[in-house]
Length: 107
Image (cartoon, rainbow, N blue to C red; front, side, top):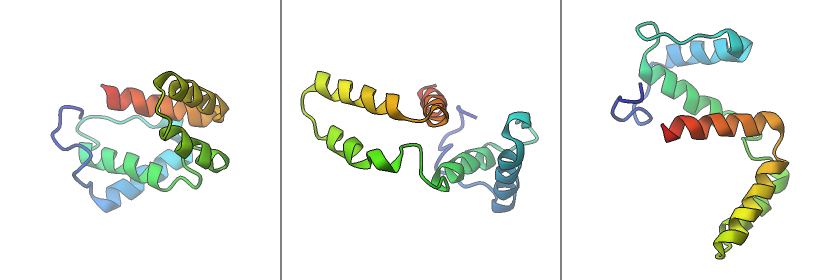
């Protein structure tokens, strides 16, 4: 689906997105998406909804002020160093999810 134009701008069918999201919440590791069975727009909408509905998000609330203040640092090496520290503070699951998301968006 990465070759689909506007993959994250188009909305999937709400009923299919809700069903897919529920399947992932019940047992994400056993889910297998298949071309032809799952529509690209449904899958991308499911991913967007998953992140939107995370209670705390990927970045923990106790570090919110640190993330925001780091964005304002002008010195590039100091900024990168601070971001590395903040990423190291993330819980393992959050860090793994963020890594998967960045890899997905990169390709």
